[in-house]
Length: 418
Image (cartoon, rainbow, N blue to C red; front, top):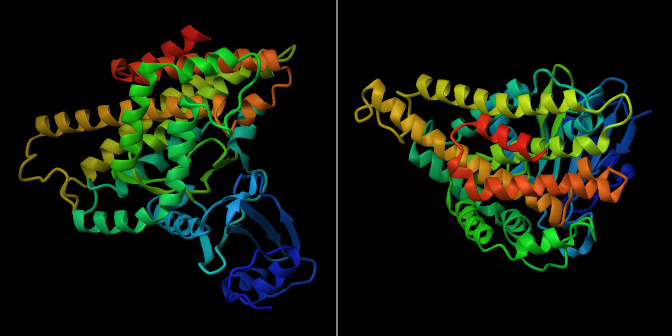
């Protein structure tokens, strides 16, 4: 078989492909009898195969040139696999504990071979729907965000290094444009791709399309998303891009990676936890009202931000005499001044996180791609009730984000709406 030009692989051709790649076939000890291959791509964009042999395993992810969940009518660059591979390697170098190893990348085939996160790893979103607590979640995700965001910013790198990386990731413009459309545009106008729990949320969706204050704020966030090259963000850091066990937290799928505002990643994660919170009443059953679990989610939201802030500042302190050129030690030469600039910097990141998190919540309720947290609530009126609370919180936070001085004030606002 010829793999010198792009072709989508299936279970059969995949085995032939693996035989031609030493870094993959070696993982299987070159034993191809009794290999199990399972297609597990439940995502919107790619084909994902788990390959398990008697002596090793890995995952193969192949990007195809259209949006898988819609079909060939929505073309999509397969170059996204290149940016995913580069981001996995960059983030993996900065935070090896929470990013799976890349074994192989083939740009022609738009294909990545990487570590298989074996059971009991499951997608975090599924764990949240099932009501499972993960004691290390806030600690792990805050570490991932602090290390990857700090380590790809000008707090850590020279402006020359930074600009080179920014230039490279400008090539991922097509996926950024997809985000611009589905997060910052479609929910605020009539769009064929939008959907919501109708008829219950018809008026709520219309209210968003007619809310001038909301539109003023979303324009500001959209501009920041496009213009601000603060750090190499994952670009899609929701609870479906994280795999967990009680001891392990692994971040996957950074194909939307680009240099953007740090708050876009932090907000995506926190916003999806808030969606999970508001969905819990729809998953309550007799004997388990999910009240204790809702409290756990609120603790995770609060701890994630507080730990992120603490770890980010610690990295800043550790590297303040390094090559980073944002705050030159000759100028920022006393502790009082250092604290002033750190507080100002992190306050802006906090407000960005709230704004982007709220925007992500809105698009998951009245936009194109919804979340299983709500979609698995069978009764549509019950589902709409949960979603409406999420919308109410998101609108409030989007408009008033600069009035929040701490994550605990956000938690109080969530409690008031529930």
